[in-house]
Image 1 (cartoon, rainbow, N blue to C red):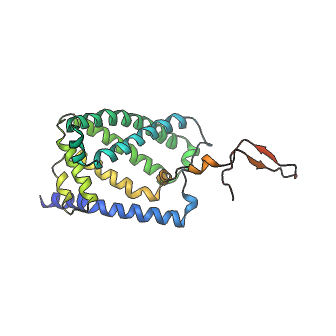
Image 2: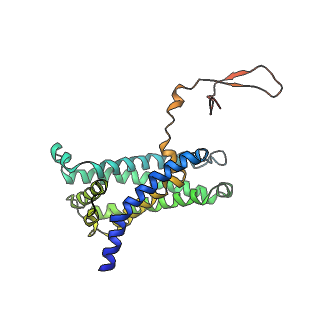
Image 3: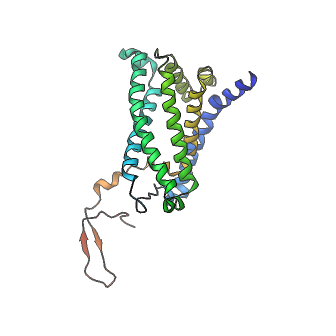
Length: 246
């Protein structure tokens, strides 16, 4: 009993704050010290097969899941009550939308992971971090899909309220936030734990490209000047420069 108490307190009471600190400080430090590594390191040139469908399915699914969790966990409970949205309805929306997005993310992530492991050239040009974070995401998606089965057994919204209260209590720096999730199924706990691991690893992997929105691309010139080595006249092309001004 005491051991479970200590583990729950560490994972859900202490770990969230450590993870947020690592993610914030690590992201700033990487951007300041190693800006040239702030990229997706795409392997498209090595092998395009599987990349398009895998990437599209994975990114669409994971983006929907990310914002779904963000909205679902951090929407104030009083706002749901004010809008007249029942907890059961919200939970059904989470199951349906999350299930579809999870299925898309699972198929896409499986294709990307298989592509990175099965192709020798791509595997040799991949870092441990590249493969590791993709594998962790795959496991997280599988566990998340598993929690849907558990959720269908209690659609009254009680567990949903527990997770919302825990998330919002953590952001409110309440020391007793961990008590909200002590009695939930281990699969929910593992899902939360993996989520925090991913956030902690965020600054040290290619996931940082999530913070880079190519807004400047919208007002780049519609052409670039290309000069031949023989000193021929410069030619305008329809390509946009990759690094203007450098």
